[in-house]
Length: 234
Image 1 (cartoon, rainbow, N blue to C red):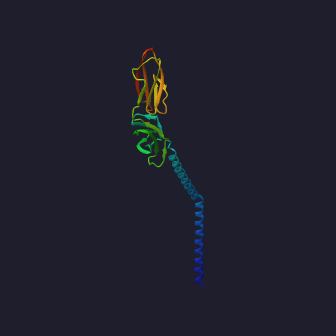
Image 2: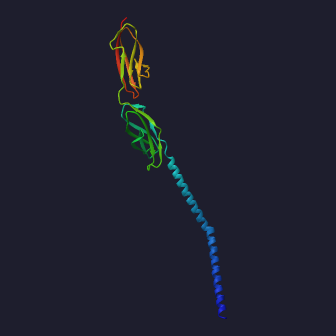
Image 3: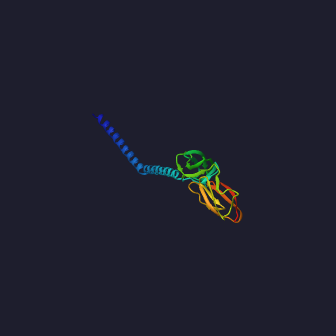
C-alpha cells in the first residue's frame, strides 16, 4: 500500500501538469488567433475581395470596350464592283465585313480605324461590319448599310422629235425613255420621269437652228448625253 500511494500522487501530478500545459497552450492559441490570426484572416479576406473586384472590373471593362463600329462615306450607289470600306471601331479589334449576310473580308482596327476593299454584287447590297475582340468572344455589329452596284450604263432613248427636224412653231416637246432610277435634264433643266421611266418636256425655240441637249444620270452618277438639232422656220 505504501508504494501504491506515491505512484498515484505522481500520476495525478503529471496529469495536472499536462492539463495546465494544455490550458496554457489553449490560452496562447486564443491570444494568437485574437491578434495575429484575425489580421491574417482579415488580410486574406481583403485580398480575395480585391482580387474578385479587380476580376469583375476587368470583365466589365472587356465587355464594355467594344463600341458599335461605323462605316464612313459609303455611297448609295456605285458603278464600280470594287469599293473601299472604311470606318471606326474599338481599338485592337477584328473587323468582319458581311455582304448580303455572307462574310467576305476581314480587317484589323489596331488604332480604332479600319479599311478594306470589297467586291459588290450587281444590284442592291446589304452591308454591315462586326467588331470582335482578339478571341472573338465579345462582338458588336454595325447598322446595315445599302449600296447599289450598277454594272450597266444608263440608257437614253429619244422618241420625239427626230434629230435634224424642221418645224414651224417656236415650241417643241422632247419625249423619250430611260432606264430605271435615272434622272433626266433637258437643256440643263430637271425633267420629271414617270413611273414607266418615260419623260416629256417642252422647249422654246429660236428662229433658225437650235441645239437641244438631253442627259440621263443614274444613281451611281454615271451620265449619258444626246443632242438634237431642230430648225425653226416661221
